[in-house]
Length: 414
Image 1 (spheres, one colour):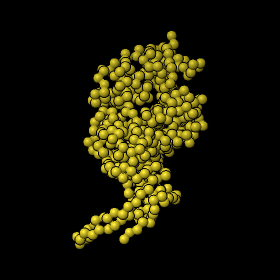
Image 2: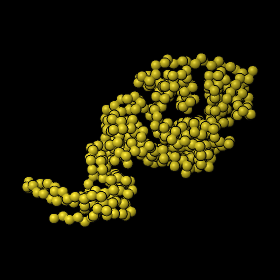
Image 3: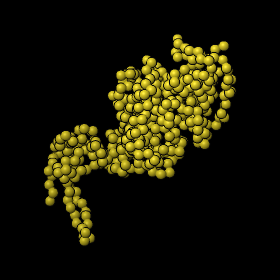
C-alpha cells in the first residue's frame, strides 16, 4: 500500500527547482501483465506551484493536446528530483501565458505562420519539435510539407517559393548599416566586390573618418561550421576562404571585423555586435535593434515589388535603396510578377548621353577633383580608390538618372 512521503505545503528547493506542494491524491492504475492478466497498482501523485515561473499545475498543452491539470508521480519528485515541467531547460509542457510562442514578444512574429493564429501558436513553445503545415504570411500559401516549430524559429522562415533567399543575418546587417547607422558612416556598400577581391565578395563595406572597414556577418553555414547540402565545398574549404578574404582585405588597407551571427536571433546577434570591435568605431547608443529584427524577418521580394508597384521608382532607384545589383532587382520583380505582387510595366530610363567632357568627382561637400573623362576615371579607379568605377554609372549620375555612385557625386565640366 503506497503512502504519502510529502505533505501539502512542503517546499522542495535546490539549484534546479523551487516547488510548493499544493495537492495530493492516490490513484488506482490499471495495467496488463505480459501474460495478459490485468492488475491494479496504486500510485501517489502531487500538484504544486513553481516559485520560479508561477505555474500552478493548471491547464497545459502537450504535443498539441490540451489537459486540464497536471499531476506528477511521487517517485519523480522524491527520487528523481524532477523540476517544473514548464520552466525546465527543455520544457515538457506548454503553458500559454508562461512559455508559449504568444507569451514572448520576441517570438510573436511566429504567430503569422500558424493557420490557426494565436489559438494554434499558444499550444507550442518556440523550441517544440512538433511539426505543422505553416502558412506563408506574405503570399498566404500553405506549405505542402510539414516543418517543425523549432526549425521555423531557427530559420525565421518557412522557405516559401515567394522568399528572397537572403539570410536573416544579411538583412539584419543591411538595416543596421544602411538605416540605423547611416549618419555615422560613409560609402556603405552591400555585397562589396572590388576587382582585387574577385571572385569573393564581402558582406558589408563602409568608411568612417577616412578609414575603410569591412564587416563580415558569419552565419551558420560555412566559416568552419555546417556546409549547405548542395555545396561541393568542405568545412576546410570554408575556413580557407575566410583566411584568403582576411588576407586580401589587409593587403588592401581595409580593417576587417567578423561578427558571429550563427544563430538567427536578434538578442544573440546584437550582443555579439556590442561585444565586437565595432563599438570602438561606432556609437550604438541610438540603434534600434528591434528595427533590425523586423527588417530581417521581412520579405525583400515583397518590399521591392510594392515599392516598384506603388511609386515611380526605377530599377536603379531600387538598387540604390536596397544596395542590391540591378540584375537582382530585375529578378525579384520578375518573381513578384509571377506571384501577383506587381503589375506595373518597367519604365526604361533614357540611355545616357556619352559626353566627352571632363568629369568632376566630389569626395565631400568641400573637396573634389577633375578628370579628363569618365573613361579615364574608369581606367584608374581601381588603383586610385580601391574600387572599380564604371563609366556608364558615372554618366548616369552626371545625367541625373542616379543621385550617387558608390557614395560619390559626379558632374560634367563644361
